[in-house]
Length: 387
Ligand SMILES: Cc1ncc(COP(=O)(O)O)c(C=O)c1O
Image (cartoon, rainbow, N blue to C red):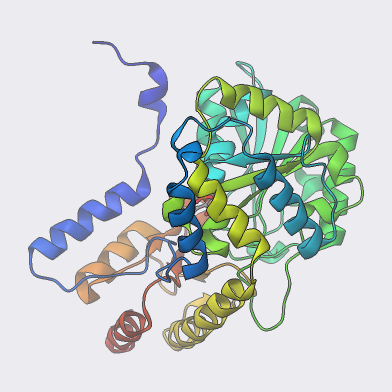
């Protein structure tokens, strides 16, 4: 049997490695507390669950869904974007439902990238941007997100010949893993860059609704001209605690939306319709879930940031996203540091290198573990000799 070369090129999935270590520790009787994976511990709202139950009773929803998602779901997405960001989309041409945003993020390279083509990809960043590029036969040009620039890219530092060759630029604000946020002014500079070099902008925005202290993240689609150059991915996952249901959306430039629909029509059969009804209910119903979530995450954030500061980590209190990105206070690399932390305290964090070379020297902590477990983890850290 000969597997394709792309399988050899796949990086080991970081969370898989971490899960393996957790299992090992648990087998040794260690009470492991994982602050590694960002997956809301809070439940899907009851009214959203009720709508799935109701939709499940209707035989119409037992059949193949359409790849382009229900017209009512596309309309609900357009209404939500209009209410939240004041941006109008034509639900027929500028909106597409996704099987979680990862579906669209992983597949959109097939719309742009031919073998040898270039994608501009943030480092550190969500690994799917570069893996999707590699699956399509392309090359990623990684641009660094540096602490001194607020983890925003320095657009002028991307060499003109690379930018000219590039077909797409990936961005993600509020950012995973750094928790950085971007302003409308920054997004407008991105639009100018995209027009200058004829690059499509793919903005991944699943964390716009997880924000603290009154801060309201902006959408890339609010930037003047954004709809000419790009699309934005959003997700019900983090906004409404729906990671398990797999539903998200892409909005923006109609030719890109259409190309993604054509790709998806050939590889999947759409989002189960009962789940599309959950999305409609979540998007159009009461909007208190994100606010309540953010209050819970904010309390956890404050406890964690204060302990990390006492231990000497370089850390800012995040304005948005449910991650704390912290500079390691010793000279250790992020993998051995995280391994020592696990060995000596039973607490799991994600080593920054897992998100790219510029993530070296940092760890990422997710705020999606119940309060009592976070409190216990922090008690252990406070007693830990960080060295
Ligand atoms: C930056 C980023 N983008 C996209 C996703 C995918 O989210 P989903 O497929 O659940 O919508 C995640 C999930 O962790 C993420 O962190």
